[in-house]
Length: 241
Image (cartoon, rainbow, N blue to C red; front, side):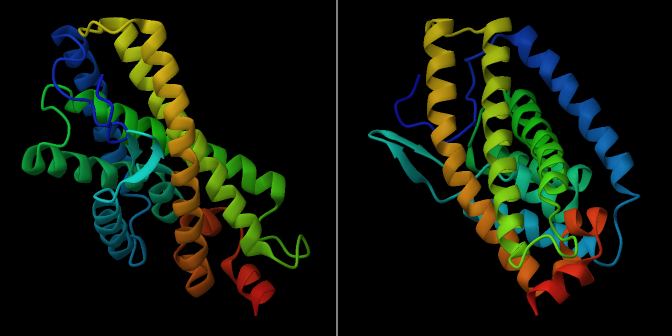
């Protein structure tokens, strides 16, 4: 395995052809469902926001941050996209970014594209959103009378969801390698490396996600999908006025 990985982008030759085909099929089915389901969420607010989210994630993914000596990571963006534009549209945003990076910048192998889409566009997005929904209900983010600092609660929600989404995406990699790993590295070494480094990468992911979501919510809470689905954005505006 490389000593300088770029978060989750799997290169060619790490998993065998049958496993690549299996997860390619999973990615196609999952994203097709997302495209069908996203039609319900797309409106005059979500459409331009989705474009901005995809562009932002594409740009930020080009920036690596150090995790350990010789190890760097970058934003996956699944939880961020899901919180801002919803899990279905968010998954499509991440998928577009990954496909462009793979085909134009050779970031991730073509034969591994299905596995990368499964891990980063599907797993990280939906796990991140699920955690965000549960955490926002537990913290009652955006609800009247919960806190004098509701944006801080939203930041915590964004941080935790991004951390969990990143670790689950890494787990997807571990599962794929367990099914059809083609490299010489042992399963124990792969699992330890992926979970260890991506727990740290998840911290960076969480900080970036929290800062971005809070910034958007402070300026335009009505554009944050999570707030629109859990509570009236007017509540948050009133609490922060």
